Amino acid sequence: MTDSLPTNELAERLNLIESMMAEGRRKVESWSWTFLLWGVAYYIAFFWGGWGHGRYAWPITMLAAGALTMYIVSRRRASSPATTLSRAIGSIWAATGCSLFIVLCSLGYSGRLSEAHSMIAVFAAMLGLANAASALTLRWKAQMVCAIVWWAAAIVACYGNGFVLMVDFLAAVFFGQIVFGIYGMYNESQRRARSVAHA
Image 1: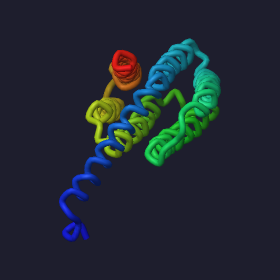
Image 2 (image 1 turned 60 degrees about the vertical axis):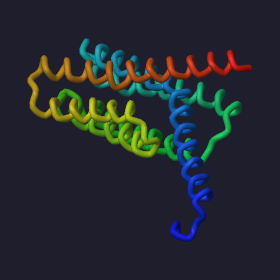
Image 3 (image 1 turned 45 degrees about the vertical axis):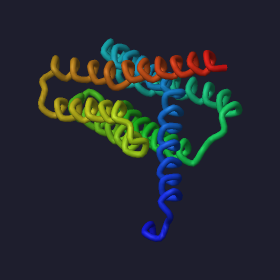
């Protein structure tokens, strides 16, 4: 089908696809605060659970972080119209969030959250999947690095001892959530500063 297209029309379509990918990356950068928020929530749940409240720490912390996220999203949604690409990326993360919530709550209430190897491996693999799907959709290397960090954490969780497991999880949250969130927020602030300077 593309053989019959004129060269300039094909170039226009490629430019449109590239601009859509760039817009998608900018959209994810504008939502990078969620990576930071959830990274902090994971730390809170982890340390709170370590003080002997594991059955309630994860569900309560995740519900609070989810409610805060939904509140901020509802306020931002009116000012930012959704595109097909942003809905696709949002769907990936919404499905991942629901899956993580269901699994972590079920593990917490069943008392099996203490099986940290399996919990961290599943948790890390799910976040690796979501980051990879988003990165592949947007052709974004920085987010693919996050996926690799989470997948590496899933592998280490299967083999590491208690101390290694703790360091593995905390490092994956730091690099895969907090650092990536700060990176995205920095890029967004730089882009805004450039647009103000050009205006």
